Length: 247
Image 1 (tube, rainbow, N blue to C red):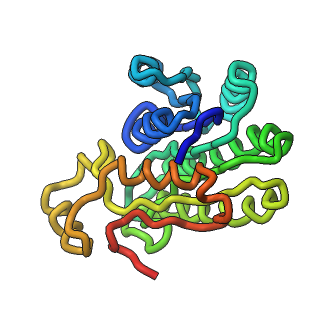
Image 2: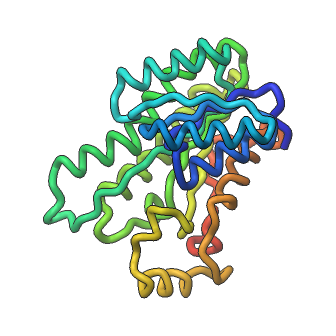
């Protein structure tokens, strides 16, 4: 899965899965544009990639802000000349039972998790169409497939990403651009670190492989879908969940 000569843009790259994806793509040879709201963390990531011999640049961007998405991607294109691989990873949670969920928490989760993917795709697609090659990879979730109590907003946004993935795949397939999704299950990140130990233990009992996933497990799937080896895969949801959800 060699990616030399490719340019990847990863959103939500300052921590967790996005951070690991950026490192993995860089190790595979891609130049990486890392985007998030946290400038210091992005700078640390760029330093980590460049110190290992890779190439990366940071672009401060709130993906829920259309103007920032447009300007950030414009700057990345100006610096790198193209974007071959887009990883829509940015995501937030605002958990609450639906009967108590505030409209603002619904709107913010949909804007960050779903609308941002549409905006990023819309702004990188001209580059991909021009070169007749591209890889769009949306990070969805097992909870977009099976739902989760207290996460109506998050589950809806992640389910929406799956529908978006399939629609975009059909729109751009004739130009050798693929669009796929990766659906992580229970992954050890800062987002899951806040959960109670009891919740974690119960979750592991539902995972046939008997362990919580690592962000590297997700990054490996992303690198595969970004590669030439995955050129005949599009509109697909790749489950990375240890068997927690099958079928």
